[in-house]
Image (tube, rainbow, N blue to C red; front, side, top):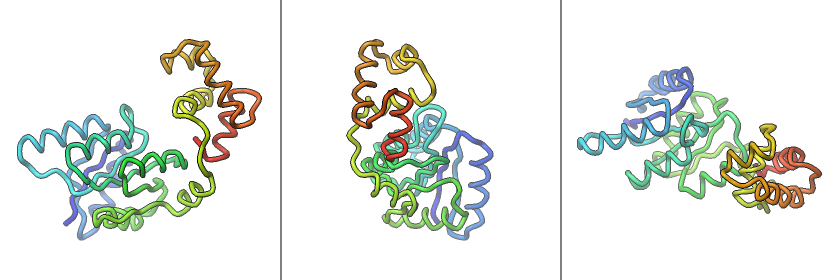
Amino acid sequence: MISIAIADDESLVASSLSTLLGLEDDLEVVCTRGSGEEIITWWNSRLRAGDNTADVCVLDLKLGGIDGIDTAVALRNLSANLPVLIVTSYARPRQLKRALANGILGFLPKTSTAEEFATAIRGVHSGRRYIDPELAAMTISAGASPLTEREEELLELAGQGKSVEDIAASAHLAPGTTRNYLSQAMNKVGAQNRFGAFTRARELGWL
């Protein structure tokens, strides 16, 4: 029996996935939580009590606090080589690359079928990678991004329609420094303004 812990800030998604996986003879959901912080707390409490945790973690990429990848890193620091499956509503190549760089074996869109989720969980539990084929192909075709992590962060904020001042405040930077980063990013992607740079970087699979 493969035991599973789930973290998703959409309670309906978490409960539905738990129900679907529980129908499989070899899968058992032992924990559902609504955030990365909550599942880390649960994991720590189980370890301190000497109780079993879970064989596999299924984590939503976009959680309310720390995201799924950072949550996976924290859990793998507590339980080395823990198999993790990241699920997301909107997958991008940069996210997949970051997940793989942090030792995460599985990455699936939430539109996957129950059978695909079950197969992915069995796969990562046995130590194999299970990546959505469409996202894998997109990542290969995207190539290496010339953007730095800071430039990517600021372009993501620009894509939300924020002003330079708001972007600077969100990133804890001075407005002048923010303008310099955005200008560099615009030059790298060949865009005339910050929102155009965001759009182009998304099209190229760099965000």
